[in-house]
Amino acid sequence: MAKFLTDSPRDIELAGKLLRAGTLVAIPTETVYGLAANAFDEDAVRRIFLAKGRPFIDPLIVHVPTFAQAGSVADTSNPAAAKLAERFCPGPLTMVLPKKNCVPQIVTAGEPTVAVRMPRHPLTQKIMASAGVPLAAPSANPFGYVSPTTAQHVQDSLGDKIGYIVDGGSCDCGIESTIVLVGEEIRILRLGAITREEISECLGAPVALSRGLMEAAAEGARGNDGARAQLAPGMLKKHYSPHAQVCLVDDAEREFPPLLGEVRRSSSREKYAFVFQKRPTRLAGAGGDFASVENVFWLSESGSAADAARAVFALLRKLDAAGYEKIFIEKCRDTGIGAAVNDRLSRAAAK
Ligand code: AMP
Ligand code: MG
Image (tube, rainbow, N blue to C red):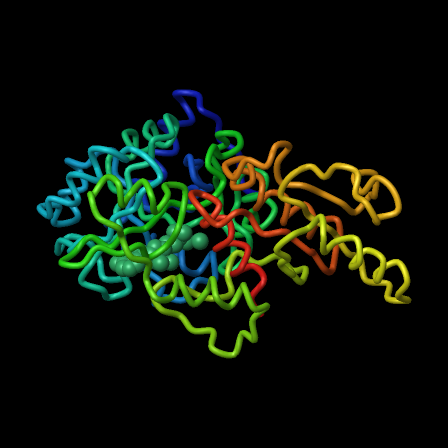
């Protein structure tokens, strides 16, 4: 069991001291919980990969308090970087920029670029100030499993591998940062809490998605054969996955009733869950009020995509813990943060 630290000045000082000395500490951020280490300490960074079972070819994000401090690990001279930083930092945006020599190769998986983020969570800011060094931190979950959005999630899946977890409550965004490659070309490498529309608007031109992202969406859309799963930097088709099998549907009000009927008629003992985006109303043809069925869940009360983002990982973990073997989930609408929710769902559904 890892020890929980609080937001008290004493615990924040301790977290900073531990991090400086090369100890791993799981920390809250506004996106998801991160497993942090001093980015300049190669041995500490190696322990992140080992604790997560993460392949060394998957680079980490380096966290710093301000855009000015991003300049200590990356070349921030690209005018687009300053524009994005002014609008979105601190916040759930990660920029991939040319790296400086001080960043160890292990952090960037040998790439000449480094991913940098400035979290806005007040407690993350305090921990970074206390540590006084840039923090390399991927999400604090075993590689490939659902990301953690509470301190208890970290305890549940990594508590036997790490010593300390700072408890900052539930994460505000609930899904990871948006990653933007800021080079000669500007591209979104991972959809996230800041939308593609917002980034395009900030830069004054439509920003493209990386090919891996479009492929993942296409795989999810056709239920996916999983045969071409591969690891580009961090862009595994199967990721964020619960142990239960995940199946996506476009329209729950139409598709769930017949599925539910089939499940009731079948002799299979598998446990099924049905997840709506929005709290369901009475469904015609469902033989009653769908909302009263015990294996029916929803990601938001009103259909808000931001609420769905906040809830999605916690619900997948809850359903795993409750022993569901198959989860039918309705897709979110595919704009704004809904596109990022769908990206996570299609990777969770990939085989
Ligand atoms: P995680 O922190 O687990 O949410 O994952 C961080 C992700 O950042 C990785 O999986 C990569 O997709 C991305 N990333 C980090 N560094 C780089 C880089 N130098 N170039 C491209 N992508 C990166
Ligand atoms: Mg991750």
